[in-house]
Image 1: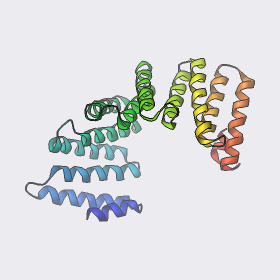
Image 2 (image 1 turned 60 degrees about the horizontal axis):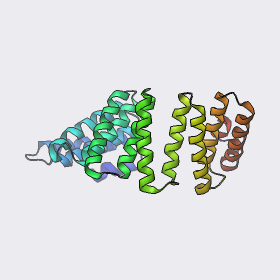
Image 3 (image 1 turned 180 degrees about the horizontal axis):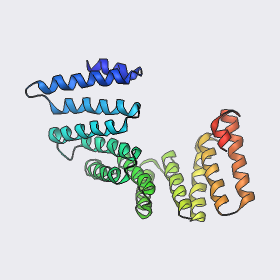
Image 4 (image 1 turned 90 degrees about the vertical axis):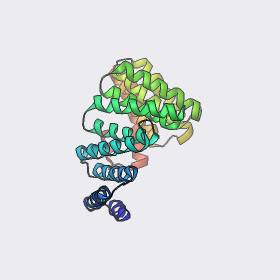
Length: 251
């Protein structure tokens, strides 16, 4: 029945998949000595199905049920618990609850650091902490989290990896929000250099950072320079997507 539910979700029949998952959990709970981790896995699948149909409140509820069972089954400091906390954080963020999202992410990050040390999951969690701290207007915390993520990305992947460029662009956006336009342009410039080297001149990720640079220059009231960046971004997007694409219209 679990596979039937999974196949339903894979084919887009999320309501049917959720119904099957619910039946499975009810059957398993009625059994004496049921394995909590197996039920937790089903709750996790239900949460992801609710995500797909944008039922974020119900997804959070399923993640909370999953978390409770996982802590009981494997302990509070297990990587499966960290994973559930991370997923919960993203749901709380989508529901506009940054305080709860940050609390889940911080607990997830602590567990991942304890279990994994310097690693991709820790870098991802630090980066997400930066994103949600920025959304919550906790700018000092956001800077610290981004700096931690940037240092770890460089340690793991080298100075010119695309994941390093991603953090630099997010830091540039933050500096722009804070009115630190020169710092923002420096971050964007480093990001642009890396992306052009790795992806070539005609790539949407290159256009994205050019567009961001145009806005920062617009905020600086450097209108001619701003226009040149917007025009370069527009040329790339027309080449990549064609003139009818929404990104072309936005540019």
